[in-house]
Image 1 (cartoon, rainbow, N blue to C red):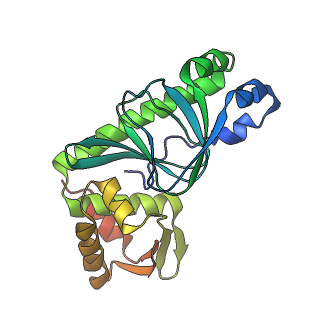
Image 2: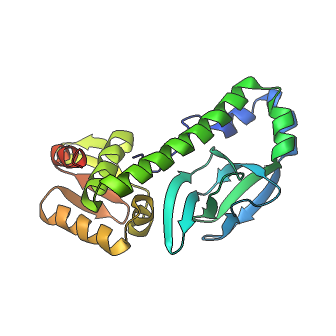
Length: 221
């Protein structure tokens, strides 16, 4: 379970700065969104492709009163609105938009960019399957342990005391990613702190003192 569920390790905005992508850059419109503002709805017409210039975007499914986070997009990530997911700004966000048809016509000239787009959509499906698997087969404690292990692997900095991890997410945002309540996340974090497994350094940073415990816990079903 990726810590922020990034769709691709390639920063496509950096690639677009190349001279050969000038035609594509000119096709994009810029739009800004405020924190918590809905960016797109399922089956919204017309379909759009967008790059995240700055800020963060949550991609999620909604069913009755439940929401399931599929991905958190950051600067450089690309997304297409043709899916059944909602997208929402997690903070003040700036996006580059282009019509899907126009994007398709232009991107056909650039096979490398087309392959990146295919990978993005494929990884989104993979994330969705991972989430469903977790919701069905893993309890909240195991899901949080798995999340923290991946966080340590992705962005952890080793020190004599353990592994310092800047999660970059609030308790509420972690709850959305894991598909559990904020109160449950707080309770589980407090249990880990009392047990000496982790130490909270600030609102979005922790020190993992016993990564072995979390790894073992994360493998339980």
